[in-house]
Image (cartoon, rainbow, N blue to C red; front, side, top):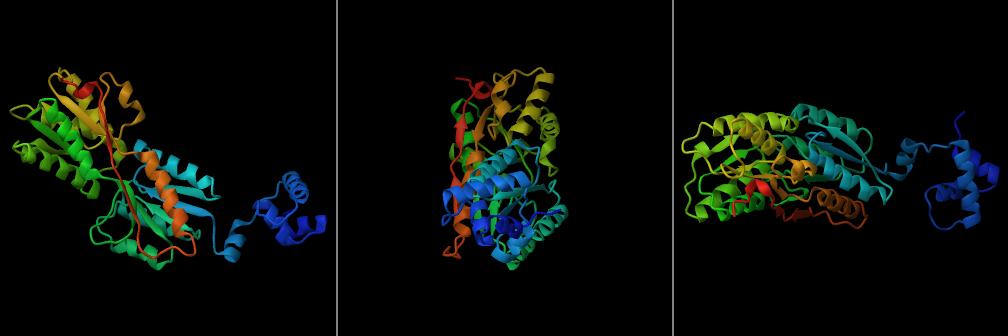
Length: 338
């Protein structure tokens, strides 16, 4: 038998509103009354009807998060930061993976919107922004994370990806590298900005930029980064002259490239100094600890939660908000030539 709020209210001789206030820890109710109600609710194993509540309040207390890959450490760290911060405010996160498939991403978003989300957080794999405009048309606030679209004005939280490429390349140059290759990621705002930071930094130092030294890791799901890093390194090994420095799009790609380099008999960093991006937990535990650019993933999640809190305030401005965090270089053995 389902227990209803009115049943609990009748038992204690109070109003349904009073029971609701006790459950939501709202003021305006005596502490002893609240304690007795909460104890009885626990005994009855009462579960609120969230769907019914959302129809009355217009809020579901649910935040949707759609990312390209749940296995990838970067998005896992964002989800951790986001859910931890939201939990303190009574909101909960529903997470889905698009597997880097634009059609699947659309299906996941449609399904989430059916649950009357209060806000949608999205690291989109769409090639263009047209479809995303439908989210705003549905009346659901949207926050883009990590990736954004030229000409599409939206709330955004992410890292300065141009700076990622700049920091990595500047560091390799400071170590004495002059033939620096780059394994770039899929064609999106993140990869494009990192590649631009790489190229501009080389040019600033008077170092020629060769297209042969820019190797694509491909557009597939990011969970197979190590495999793609290995394949990219196979191409790098054929270059003449051989690069003496390598900036990888992310740490998973860098790990695959590193393993392939070891198999080819190379010494890191003596033959090839390497820098990745992401500063994942295992980066310091590799055979040669990996220098990496930290994007501050947990903080991206936390700052997204703060942005959501602002967006859901009644007096919130309709203007889009943008938070761009500055990355940090974490130097380890893989790049230390000096």
